[in-house]
Amino acid sequence: MHVKLLMTLWMLMASHLLFAQSVATVGFDGCDYSSIQTAINAGHGEIRISLPSWNNRQNFRIQSRDVKIKGGYSSCRNAELNRSDNFRTRISGIAESQPVITILGNSREFRITLENLDIVQGTGSGFFPGGGISSFNAKTRITLTNTSIRSNLGHLGGGIALVGGQNSLIATDLIVVGNSATKGGGIYCSGSQNTLLLTGNTRSAGFQIRENEATNGNGGGVSLNNGCTLIAFAGAENRGFSINGIIANNASGNGGGVAVESGASFIYSGDKSCFYNRCRNDVNPAFFSANTAGAPLPATSGYGGALFVSGSNSYAYITRVLVLGNNAAYGGGFAATAGGSIEMIHSSQGCDSRGFACNELSGNSARYAGGAVHLSSGAQVEISKTSMAENQSTFGTVAWLSDANTKLNLEGSVMFKNSPFSEFRGISVFFLTGRSGARPELNMSYSTIADNDVNRPVINNLGGIVKLRSSIIYEPDTSKLYSATNDTGSLFDCLLVDDRSTIPGGYMVIEGNPRFVNPAAENYHIDKRTSPAVDFCDDFTQPNYTDMDNESRGVDDPSRTNRIGPFDVGADESL
Image (cartoon, rainbow, N blue to C red; front, side):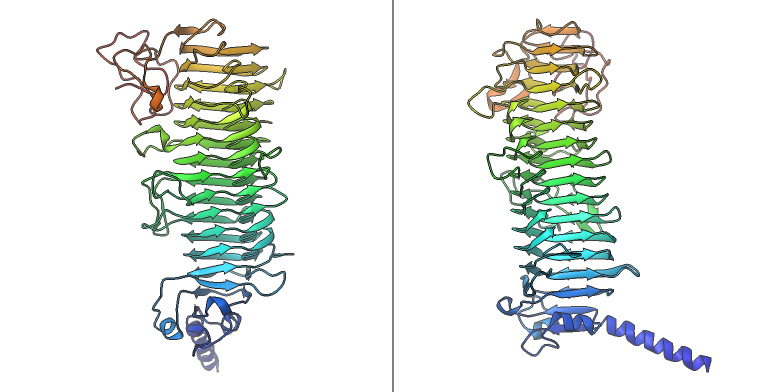
């Protein structure tokens, strides 16, 4: 009796497994089903769609199932033979106030694969706030391949919403474009057990998150909340402008491109990285461009045109990324506040002939303060080996710092041709404002400041702490290099400047022309034969990184006499 029951149970389980792995086709020309939902409910493990785009309007729910849904077939026969016709099959939402795809189920991890699909015209609401794909308290591993999500509406996440649960979403060549939501125009993610990985295959340049809008909140492209993590690898196909990356998103609030809040994390890299055998192009940097916070332009509100980070455990890591042409009222490129932290770190890999331009924070605009970066309320930002040029703002054409425990660490970076927001000349490259017990701090080493358009002190320190080491400041057309009030705790060591009269005290602060190779062509390397910056300083300030060309620091030039040591000052170590 027991043997018979066991045999029956085994047969039922085996038939279920076989049926779960069976293939069904969906279409109108001899396919198994005409409805995707019907095929899902029947328990098929793989569903191939040959529905024509003009007649494929349906919403469907995936609840507690493993399933692969694959488009790209021009006929049911091709679907049966798994003969792809290399296009995305459009699925348009039809039911009012429903996402195109709803995902539920958390009794175990369910595996869902969507491939060669174009998901459009869904509307999120209630527990399922995302318009294109919406997951609520599910436990899933979602794989998206060659899928576009566009022209959807939502409350949270116009294109994709992961709310609660435990989800890992892995996307290759994902396109999220033209979606709209109150918050998180393209993607919304909330929950410490939710992770998104966006990458590209070896033939393409990665993903696109572009032209999405947060209509009444933060995160035009992406909104990350409550411990969610997004990891993105996306390189550009060429040195010019590219639509790959995080491009032209708008937020009425903060974070035109990405908003990282309440302990969330964001990692964005142009380096080659492989996950689950998916590798992306690593020839060129990634793009983070033309995003706007406080839209429409000109922005009179909004923080962080490209990126906004807020919260003591909120974190962003950026490497080999071009942050270009973003806009906000405060922090045209980045804004960090309330203890949020950002690292923009140069990769150890090479990039292009300009060397340091693998990281660029350039051409960004803030109407009021912080052309490139705005820091407040205990934010911590580190930027290394980065070119910062042609940023615009009224106060702090490169950076604005305020409040206690706020800190900006700069190393190996070049700041040039930053300018005012409007017809008025900009007020300082760096602007610090603080008070007793609430003093922001600027630490700069092995960096170069030159050829900026300002009519006030290059560094205007109103109650902060400034530490300048092993750097070049060459602004002969500016009346003052440094101005300060309540200036205690500041430090100046091993500086080559055009005028030291406004720098209080310091050790080895020397006047001189650094003799850049060709500043008119934006080449701020120093001439190894004639520059006084060569073999200028000792190892009192230890560098954390190589120079802007990935060359070692502190290399002694036997043809030059050391001033006090073998370390060149500025962003370039001349070899």
